[in-house]
Image 1 (cartoon, rainbow over the protein chains, first blue to last red):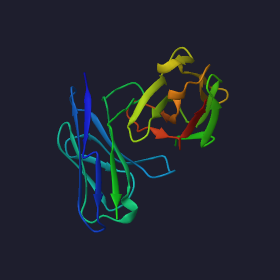
Image 2 (image 1 turned 45 degrees about the vertical axis):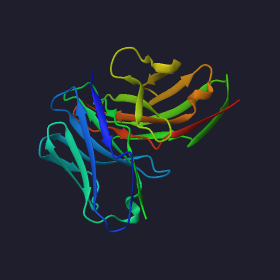
Image 3 (image 1 turned 90 degrees about the vertical axis):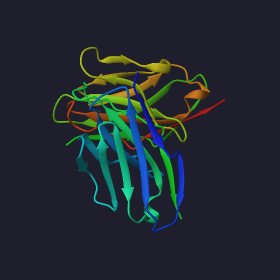
Length: 114
Length: 113
């Protein structure tokens, strides 16, 4: 069966510090991968998605970036965090050619920028 | 472009009462529709989905939803609420296996004893 992991589970970082969040998927090959952010009261915001290694699409201009160095690994990064980067970050995957693009979510990372 | 509207950011029900969470969508092609549930500090879990076929879809935990094309709706219901149903619920739409999901802003379900 497929599983998705995210780490760390929680993170507290000062403004201006770098960020690296990691997501890995097991039990599937060539998944579509997604990064979302949830800020309080604002629902889910799609940040990035990837249909393959090295192929990243950005949905929202910001100081975050994403990379996919391996088939089942998706990394969210920042060189300098802003207060507004605080939130709950969710990684998700879906199968290529899935009916309707059903997505499966990881447990999330709670990021607090102080 | 697709969009999802969830009416009511918060819905309160008593334990044992009917749960009704509303979702209306906009899509230029026949949609694929989903309901997800999120418990505090956890990821989203799929409750149910509509792709094709029967318009009444049954999901986990006793929830069901009905796709009504004429009303562009996909409301989520459960006959009898349980305390453990208290969570945030998200409706989502896509128009193909190649497009991203568009989520509604979510509805927080509060269940009182």
